[in-house]
Image (cartoon, rainbow, N blue to C red; front, side):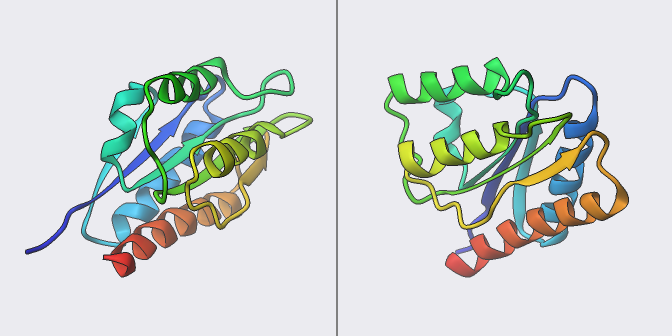
Length: 150
């Protein structure tokens, strides 16, 4: 019996910078092999539980995470969605402060008890080729860690 591992790469992007990072993360995850990947800018809170890993692209706007991401977490908490033990990772672009990905990671780790071993990937403004390679590597690591856990 073979398992299909499900990964969600969810992102918000106003300028396109975090979207570029999300595409690179998704590309890296797909390169690892046997994964079902959903790349999206919106998901309902009730859907979060069907994924083995949730990777969120959260740019920083006005020293905070985007309202869409904040509402997703609020709805997931209200609905009692369990993400305990699932893998979580965060990335995002920023202009001057960059705290949104760190806030998202803290929520994943402390509120939802997800496995969040890595620090967020942060790109100042437009991600360069080195940052996009780091995003691909993040996606691949998450997919491979899921495969080893099965």
